[in-house]
Image (cartoon, rainbow, N blue to C red; front, side):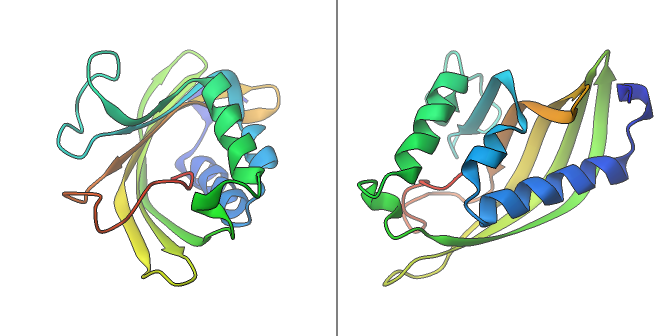
Length: 163
């Protein structure tokens, strides 16, 4: 498979598979969808177009930090997710925004519903901007950015799940 031949439908299938893994808390399987140098970012709500190197982000993880995040989420001592939230993800408006060698830039809208015992339902709405890499094992996430539309996080609580 080459980046030039990857279709929007293949990217949609990849995103739907990723959503299923995250909703099922199959976080170790989700890690396998990332490249070894992957990044995962959520910019602050007041500066969604900012640069993670010069601005405070809600999340700005490299692969080491992503692995640490997954390890903490698996721990029963991770109080923010013990017991685990239940989530349901909706992905739409998937589009290819660029191609460069083995890489494909894509964007999509998302809604993530988060259900926790004794808490009101959290609804995270926004859009993804991903850089996918075409590998011998299929598509892999090199950069994952979730830009939320909400004006403030106070009503949603902490972002302890993978958006």
